Image (cartoon, rainbow, N blue to C red; front, side, top):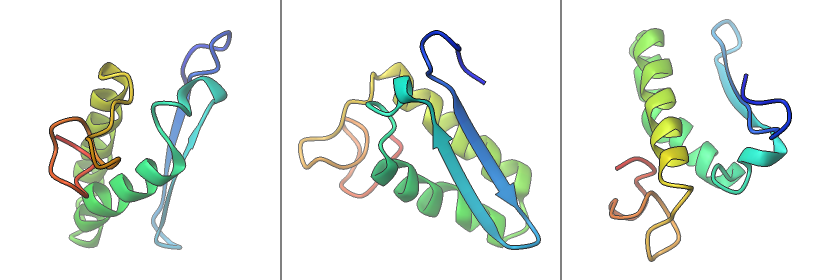
Length: 93
């Protein structure tokens, strides 16, 4: 998961029985994927799909957000939240 030398891996875990979701990042990915951003993204993008029983849709939505964020270099909007150009509180554009 990621590149060992760059330590830029991301692990996304879904625990269906305990109804938990977690994301862990390597040191090299933390600048673009802060814990605050990840928690917000998981709650706004993934959790609603999981509540509807759409596990694959939740994983896909979270993965797309993470990839978009990494492609943007972790840029934040002017208010410090979300991706550049996204509405406040929206982690994904």
